[in-house]
Amino acid sequence: MNSTRRTNRLERETSPYLLQHALNPVDWYPWGDEAFAKARSEDKPVLREHAR
Image (cartoon, rainbow, N blue to C red):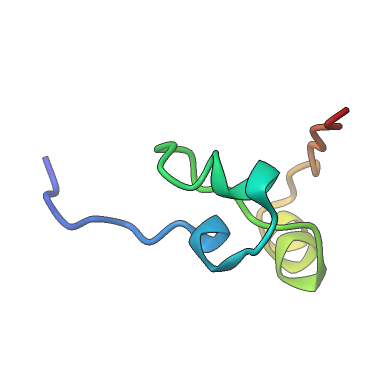
Protein backbone atom coordinates (compact mmCIF):
# COMPACT_ATOMS: atom_id res chain seq x y z
CA MET A 1 0.00 0.00 0.00
CA ASN A 2 1.27 3.45 -0.87
CA SER A 3 1.78 5.54 2.29
CA THR A 4 2.10 8.85 0.44
CA ARG A 5 -0.75 11.15 1.43
CA ARG A 6 -2.62 12.48 -1.57
CA THR A 7 -3.48 16.17 -1.27
CA ASN A 8 -7.18 16.81 -1.58
CA ARG A 9 -7.95 19.84 -3.72
CA LEU A 10 -10.75 20.86 -1.35
CA GLU A 11 -8.18 21.74 1.32
CA ARG A 12 -7.58 24.96 -0.64
CA GLU A 13 -11.25 25.99 -0.66
CA THR A 14 -12.76 28.61 1.65
CA SER A 15 -16.31 27.27 1.81
CA PRO A 16 -17.09 25.60 5.17
CA TYR A 17 -19.26 23.09 3.29
CA LEU A 18 -16.37 22.03 1.02
CA LEU A 19 -13.86 22.04 3.86
CA GLN A 20 -15.89 19.46 5.78
CA HIS A 21 -15.03 17.04 2.95
CA ALA A 22 -11.34 17.92 2.77
CA LEU A 23 -10.25 14.93 4.88
CA ASN A 24 -12.42 12.47 2.96
CA PRO A 25 -10.25 9.93 1.10
CA VAL A 26 -12.12 10.57 -2.16
CA ASP A 27 -10.11 12.64 -4.65
CA TRP A 28 -12.61 15.50 -4.89
CA TYR A 29 -12.27 18.41 -7.31
CA PRO A 30 -14.01 21.75 -6.81
CA TRP A 31 -16.44 22.68 -9.59
CA GLY A 32 -14.46 24.21 -12.44
CA ASP A 33 -12.17 23.78 -15.41
CA GLU A 34 -9.79 21.34 -13.70
CA ALA A 35 -12.66 18.97 -12.86
CA PHE A 36 -14.05 19.09 -16.39
CA ALA A 37 -10.64 18.57 -18.00
CA LYS A 38 -10.00 15.53 -15.78
CA ALA A 39 -13.41 14.06 -16.60
CA ARG A 40 -12.89 14.59 -20.34
CA SER A 41 -9.40 13.06 -20.27
CA GLU A 42 -10.74 9.93 -18.51
CA ASP A 43 -14.05 9.87 -20.42
CA LYS A 44 -15.97 9.96 -17.13
CA PRO A 45 -19.09 11.86 -16.07
CA VAL A 46 -18.97 14.79 -13.66
CA LEU A 47 -20.99 14.11 -10.52
CA ARG A 48 -22.35 17.03 -8.56
CA GLU A 49 -23.42 17.11 -4.94
CA HIS A 50 -26.01 19.74 -4.17
CA ALA A 51 -25.89 21.19 -0.65
CA ARG A 52 -28.84 22.82 1.04
